[in-house]
Image 1 (cartoon, helix red, strand yellow):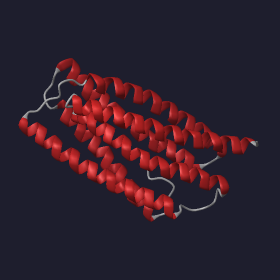
Image 2 (cartoon, one colour):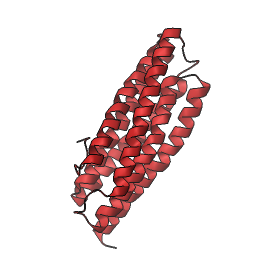
Image 3 (cartoon, rainbow, N blue to C red):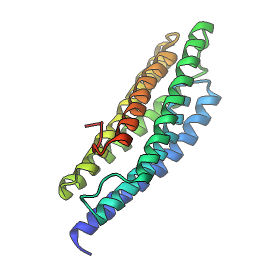
Image 4 (spheres, rainbow, N blue to C red):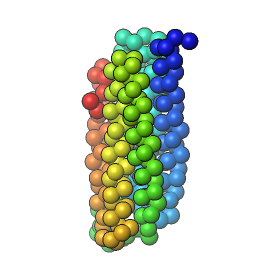
Length: 209
């Protein structure tokens, strides 16, 4: 096996790991978020499921550029991007409305302990993925893989928001901080949705650059 093929195999493996991790993170986060009545954790988990759809497009992209590095985005990738974009917008709408409602009613989560735990793990895992994807992308001189690494950084930012909001509530019990954290997640989800539609309409590598 040539060095190039080995690197593409690693890149594809990282894409598959990202998909599997997001499925597990989504299941655990939405369950615990629902049980603990933590909107931020539930929203974080919902975002993970959407990232799975995006991850399928990334995995397909890696196979495409492996066979033809100069090829353009195909119909499968464009469709995945559109579906992902719609899902992000639906998530944003639901999170914003629910956040406003919880602030209005004064609802507070039972605990945000698991939000702290899950966000800490996510920051570690996602940062390792970012570093590894950048390493492979640089070795392959692949702009698409490097762009995917930059997009993975968004997951790190969202994890940090969850960690901060969950940590503040768990330590200080400040009212509405969980809902404010949810609005922060909504901002990044909206941004990701917008970028998905922009990428679907053009051959620009990644709006996350």
